[in-house]
Length: 307
Ligand code: G4P
Image 1: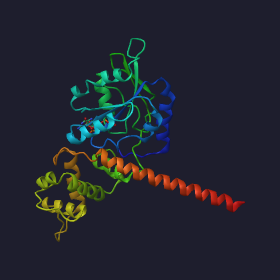
Image 2: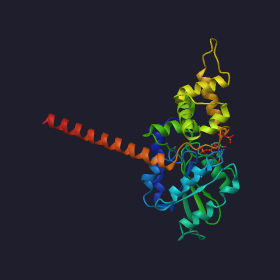
Image 3: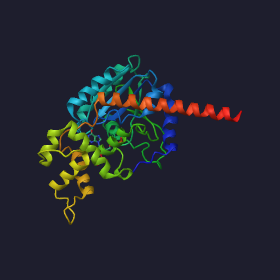
Image 4: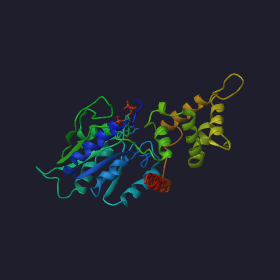
């Protein structure tokens, strides 16, 4: 499904969460372990205040274990936050979530006084799969499809812990262009919204930098080209994606690289590290602050002119 981020859908999620905020003891945010920063929903951080939060780094079977460890440490250093790496493809890895919920809300977790945890995640991070495993049964999806207007669900997952699942779509980061690329590369945002050559070029650039040996081994490259686009061209040549006249069919090369990256045929790959994201977020914040200042000045000038 191509995701359209209509403001209406986004506001519905926000409204529903605000409505039940007072009843909630903690948040569970399901993230994609390959992109724990880019798959966060920016509204959750705002709305949550000081409430405890468990970051579930799902799909850790696809991510680089060393970088996942760095993310876990990063989140654990954050106030009122704990983190756990899991894979919904390996249900046993989820077994500690219930006890973690109980630890995060020590004054609850008794009969008649259950821990109430709101589970949130942008589409495709594996929230439904996670809920189904925790609940030990199939629970209908609440809100990724705009047409679905199911209301908020409460799911008893045992041990006096209740999950609140809210309808409405949660959107990913939009202010950081890098996040957009990474969401497209990992498949969270469907390709139709992007130019395939463009995202594969971004992926090639990143892989040359972060996983050079794995990339060389997979495509039998001795050297890389000077930039991601030309490296993608080399990959295309190796895989016989050639048009008449010997030109590389870039679209085909892009598909091969992205498919094999997602299928872990290159390596278990993480697309971002805590250090990268801290630096990027700083830049985004500075840019937004500058823009806010310019807007304020423009407004002031406009008012003065009208006097
Ligand atoms: P959502 O509710 O957050 O939108 O996500 P959902 O659970 O529907 O999962 C989205 C896709 O991610 C599904 O694949 C699911 O199987 C896959 N997935 C979820 N958790 C994990 C995980 O820990 N590891 C891996 N490797 N994949 C995971 P799909 O292609 O849409 O469906 P299918 O492959 O299950 O048929």
